[in-house]
Image (cartoon, rainbow, N blue to C red; front, side, top):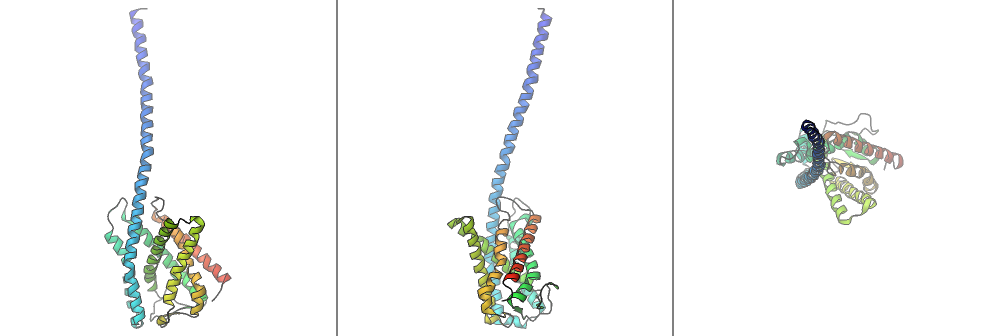
Length: 304
C-alpha cells in the first residue's frame, strides 16, 4: 500500500469520527437542556404556589382586620337612629366610606410582588365579590321582596334594580350596592378562613366538607338575618314575618354562601394564577347557580 493511499484512509477515518461524535455531542447537550427545562417549571411552580398562598393569607388578614370598622359604623348609625334623617347624598357617602377600605387598604399596603398589581389576590377578591353583589342586589333582592317579605323604608329617592323581576314593586336603594360590597367582602373572607382551618384540623373528607360549608353558610346567614330583623331597625328595614324568616328564610339567604364559597375558593388555588377573565367567568357562573337555586326555592317553598 502506497503512502498516499494510507494517508487518504487515515483522513477519511478521522473525518468519519468527527462527523459521528459531533451530532452525538449535540444530542447530549439537547437532552441536558431538556432536563434542565423540565426541572425549571416545577421549581417555578412551587415558588409561585407559595407566593399565591401568601398573597391570599395577607389579603384575608387585612380584610378581616378592617371589618370591625364597617360593622361598628353600621351598628351605630342604625341603632342610634341617625340614618333616619339622612338623604341620598348622606347614604351614598356613608356606604362608599364603608366599602373603600377593602379596596384602598390592600392597594396601598401591598408590597411589589412577582406579578402586576391587577393580578394580585385582593383585586380578584374584590372583582368576584363586586359581580355577585351587583347582580345579586339588582336581581335577587326581588326574590327577598316577593318570597321573604323584605321591606326597605329608607329616606331615599334614588333606587336601582331590575324593572322586570319582582311582583310586589319593591325598590332597592342605590346606596346599598357599595354597602353590600363591604358586607360580602367580610362574609366571604370569614367563610374562606373558617372553612380552611376546619378542614385542616378535622380533615372530614369530601362529604364532610359539604356539611362544613352548609354549617358555616347557615351561621353567617342566620347572624345577619338576626341583626337586620331586629325590631330596633323596623323604621328602616323589616321582614313581614320575622319569626318565619328566622326559621325558614335563613335557609334561602344561605344560598349565596353555599354556592359562592366553594367557587370563590377555587380562585388562585392549587398554585394557579388566575387571569381576571377567569375570575369574571367564575363569578358569573356562581351567580347563575344562585339564581337557579332561588328559582327552585320559589317553586318549592314559595312565599313565607
